[in-house]
Length: 211
Length: 285
Image (cartoon, rainbow over all chains, first blue to last red; front, side, top):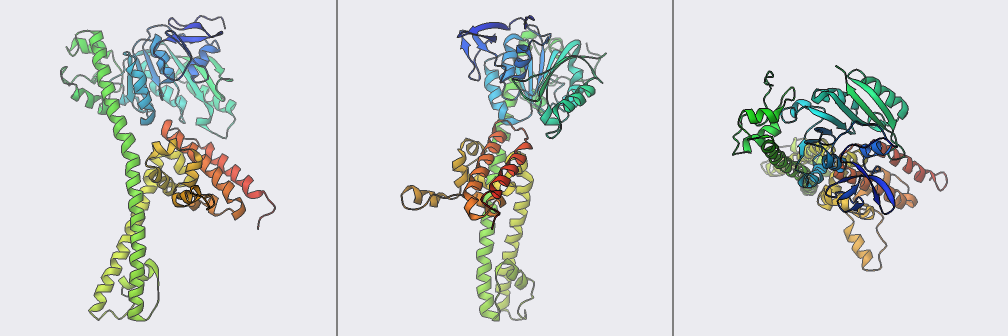
């Protein structure tokens, strides 16, 4: 838990509780103190990865491609400390909330696109330093493989793998093993950690693209 | 940086008019990404990197706004219209079929009922078909058959589209009941905002108001009675079954509206809950 946080992400005291925070416009009822807004690890898988002390390799002002932005809870924090941030989400309804989040962040570009079809947004998205992936669909390793084209050689894939999206009935451990094995075709997996108690049956993965 | 043949979203657009660029964001494609910011400055679309990002943001925000508005409102309203049209066709076919049955009975002294009887008249299986007066009756019977076929086509359309609009709700309720619930509450958004007790009695408003004004018992179920889990449960447990079903249906509607995720586990949870309800209170009837 002593690992350093990315620039722009700080530990901050909220009424006696120290928590990971960024500075920006509050979006989802998170605790705030002045400009600081708590990055709630229960609401955000990337927030949980940071709270658990995983070495994400995140830094300030990086270019980021965010797959599965949903209503923008996590991407709001990412855009607070990151550089140009491309937020891909396929379902129109959550994008409505994502647009409110983007209203407050000039470096956030919302794209109503299917993460399984990167060719439909490669004409908009530039090569990036980080891909954050949180897509609740079957074939999560495939989505990561398809989007590898966006990642710079020394970039990082930060994925939250949801076991139940692959197979509701299978043992999560077995699902994680399958997904990580498939990921290794295209990525070097640097670290994995289960995200409980924040998120049940989720595996946080840090990976680097293979040459 | 221009060794790729891929074309960026801005390359055929004028910097002053972003509508072409918006169209390209929505429909364009490229195999690989490129340093689009640098390319945009090179080609004169943007004066510098900051200007490029400003334009990109303006265009992506505008496109997303439009898409969200189009897709999110169009689909559940289409579904609402089609389920109401289906109900109209069904009711009209039945009413006219009754008229045909009455008319046919008086003419041929043979009694029959429903759309099936109208179909037999339309196909000339009833009566001798010679008299010119038969033509008026037969023509009416043909309309009944046509309206009834329209009902079936609308049902097929609903079965295709409801799962796209509300996947989880359609999974639990079946597409037709899902569409009825959406229609009764005026849209998926308002259905998602209803408490499950309201979902339980949607379609039973008359009974509910009679109850609220005093005297009448509270309705145990509205349109969800058509679900096998309510109608197929024995009378004493129907209230519990309706409450449990309504609870899961409103969760499903909320997931469909707010997240769009598919949650196959909901079906299993509902099945298990129903099994418990149905198995309690002795060994059944």
